[in-house]
Image (cartoon, rainbow, N blue to C red; front, side, top):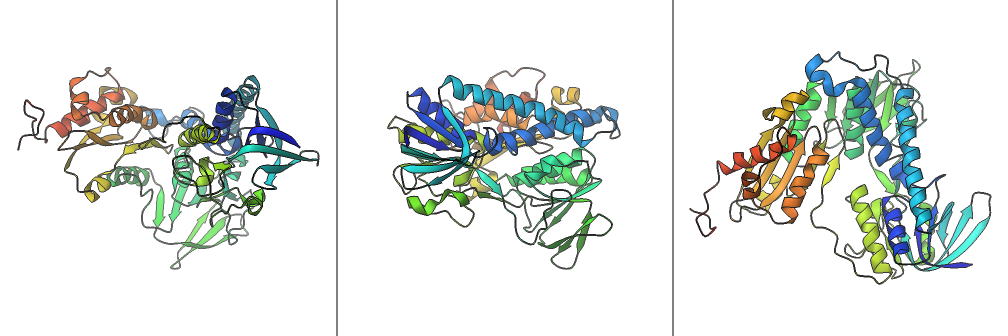
Length: 472
């Protein structure tokens, strides 16, 4: 049995950042990855592939230029699944090579295999050739990520009925697709297919979607989806999915309404990939969705020598926050100082159009009883928006009337996930409305929308007196 200072199970965003941080401390580190190559779900079936697919779809379909040249405009007339896959393979290979190089230059040992616990400090790994290895460590980090939730009533076949991992392997673009689940993954894939002129029906048992996003943003987003022909079927559950003799699929809905489409994507949730870890042997338990409970500041589990980070611990399940969680967990596991996880972090949804948000929503501000004012800017109000041919997109800022501090920043539209970082910096540094009003922004840019939105709020806010107090 070989001993390590730190063992990481999983090489996704949390695992890779934790392993490299531990190696920077001069520790002997082992990373066990069950996939064929390092990278985890993020590189192989999740974050990077879906965002690459999105970018490829927008570029080859000519989506971004249709404001100028009309809805029939195409960069490539006969777009195929092969066209989408070609760019995907190039991107994934590059990501994997970068990660392998990072592990190699930091002297992190990697092993492909399926890991399971023997006790609180020891694991067994079944290797590729059927051999079994045994390793021990002072500390172990679980960064195993998630797998798609696959209920028994869905007849998955990887040809017409897919989960969110399988959809990347489709062999042709369908004429129509029904997406079950209006969470982040479902929304992203539904809008990507819609941008490829595939007829999309979005099915969600709840009456609303993405409840953690500001409602005004969701209203604007929903209007855009309907305007381009997407069908939203909310408030009814899918009860049965069948394959018909003519090759189509049929979804029988609660209440008697049926939906027919060429393909079905079931994207209603994911589960922590903890089933094969033999958690009982180390004294840990997972919840009904396979998630592991941790201390939110240190990411330590109920077992002192075991930590967990990334999607396996649940919300927010973002690659960006997973990286920070992994690094902080490694610091605590190895007795090194670490800052607390950030209170406010940007949430990015790579739908078409993008959405990104940080801080409090208007609903949260109202719930807390804070006196506030909002400012709105439409991208079409900026010169850069005209240059880019944008007729949609908005940025919303929420300010406290008492302190004039920025409380929340919410964006829907082109470049939202990039633009959000200006709001993130101002919010985390406790900046006020005056930052946006008094500073010059590059012109023409979409970032100018910050100044427009701030001025919109300033026009309705009380004027501060010379001592910086708010006049009545």
